[in-house]
Image (cartoon, rainbow, N blue to C red; front, top):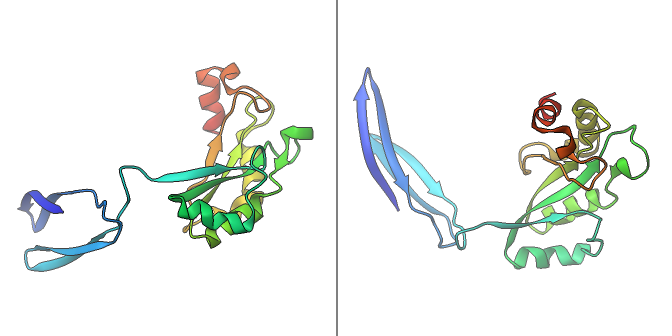
Length: 178
């Protein structure tokens, strides 16, 4: 499952090139590579099939995943969940400022069911600065933006408090790079 494809040495350094075949067996496989008498332990987690599947969850349109249903999500073959935490910023008005009311229960229940979970924020690029929105997102989801969770995601949608495309590529890039 692991193949040494090349190697070189010089100035006391050794480079080893290798390739690893996908582990579709579902279990963890382990082995060692020995280079100049030093053994390096390697392991590879298994995956089922060619893809890893997960879910995108928010209170909008979902509303029905109960704590007891999260294990069913896991047993259906899903291994991760992106969970909406927020939208807009702390000064947004009406539906353009949003703390997802199911965020905390969804992320806790997803993790309890054995899914890797992460938070996402729906941005309003037309009315607010990226810095203000990031501060709001971190105030909501900061405990879930750390090791053991998926990386945070910025979700830009055309139907959500300002169409990102209306800014044009240069202005949108400037907004994201704030």
